[in-house]
Length: 208
Image 1 (cartoon, rainbow, N blue to C red):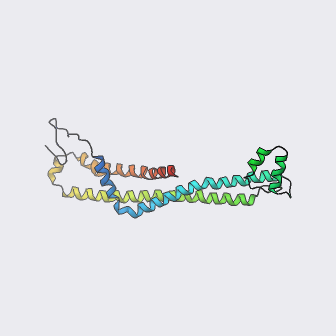
Image 2: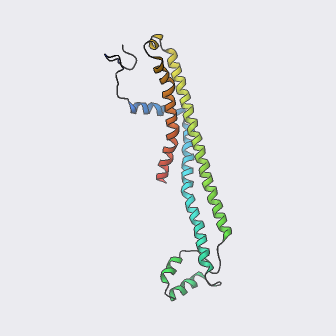
Image 3: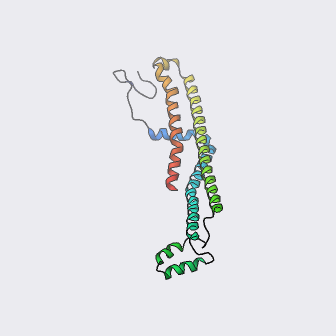
């Protein structure tokens, strides 16, 4: 006997049909429309988090430059200028080393400026901390949007089931209806929670 949305084969089993993934995807995306504000906030958090994660290593590189400049400057004669030191190195035949140190901002006679290094490291720590906090907020927003959408979907399913005639349930096993009302929606929610934030983060990380 035929049921809604399908036919029964001669052997009594349901006729298997190919699923409309494109149509299902569009309907699923449409269900997230009430969460537009949350999704925009989610995207903003992810963009800022990825941006800070990209900037963080550059700040750490600045700390490395300060340490290197201090090590180089410590072994140079105090009172001389950077240009004088480089000129002296070229006169001794160390032109390649002089060219390498030309882009290094060192002061002859001065060692590592631990105060400046500390400030840079604190800034890097703040940047990475902010990136982690924003990603945590984004994860929470993902869960919020998905949970609200799944709640509305359950309400729609409940409303639909309450309108169906008793003959519909007589023709189907109890487990089939229960699976559609609970398990399928739970699987959709879990899949979205696990993949939505990771997908956005991965895409923006590649772009960054």
